[in-house]
Image (tube, rainbow, N blue to C red; front, side):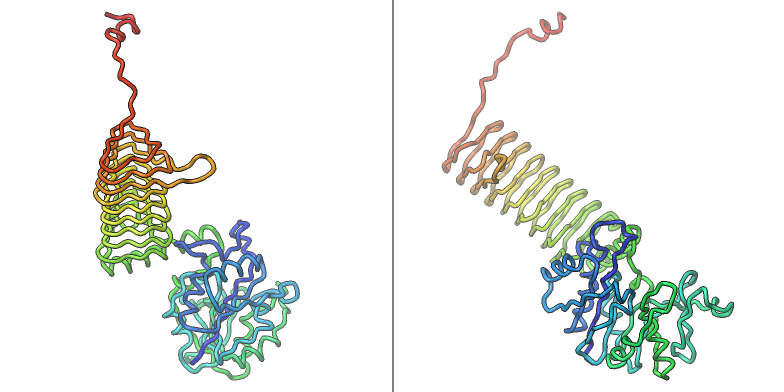
Length: 430
């Protein structure tokens, strides 16, 4: 059956206490709304996102990452609430799945389960050990009969542990008939989507409960919720990667962006962060290191190394306290305490401790090019733009501010001056 998807993302999210729209807060590298869109794209070719608060900002971000997403602007002044968000919508398929943009943990499998069957409405429900504060879903003979708010429950209904999870799959013809009939005769003066369940039951339509995992249907309404969702997402990402063959030391200490990709048998030690669209192929990232938006292949980094965006490392060793930024290193050794920015270094070259590429003059960034089999001694400054050809030795403590030809030695040092007995004179001792 063809499915249309509507994602509700119009709310202001005041409990998030942020100037950023709630649905754009990130979880494991993506706005939470994008996680919902990803799940929706897997099941539908007709997706509409309902917007109101900071609509233009959210729409622009979605359009930068997705094609063929439709948008509907909720008239929140006239028609507030979840039911009001659906007014004026006309999904193209015979079945419509209604999601919430603040449920980033939903999965494709759950969405497919919600759209199965021939009931007029499939309604997501959760069984909670403690349902306090939630409206109860009353189920009889396997079908939903009503939703009762807690304050309206009888003592018997208060014992019910089944609650509404907030996602529905509805026959589109019914949805288009029921939505115009919604009213706001309630304490909040809002139009509630839950009222379509009552309408369907009164008409003798089948409303089928679909029991779902509580974890997937958690709404994110605060920074506390955001952190909780991040923990769950991180656990999923790391479990999946370890099943695929990635080795992790103390995985609970590791952060992995959902956009990162791994190939071969990679190893991540404790305290590692993999951020952005990083690709790791047969890579070993040691304790405390950070990799951002870079490609690392048959290489090791760290401990306490940092690879910043735009870097490519192949067959390379990056040691402790080495920072690489927007550089391509092939077959290189940089063992410790170096900064390599806007640099290309070819195979067989060695970068000593304390080496710095001086790539920024306060206005512009400049490149450094280092050829094959170059030995750069400790405490060297490479003042860009500069090119060092193959088979060059740069002596320790040298400042390189001009190109070095193949086969040369470059050395710049002030003469060492030794003053005999100065210690005793300075401190007045013998």
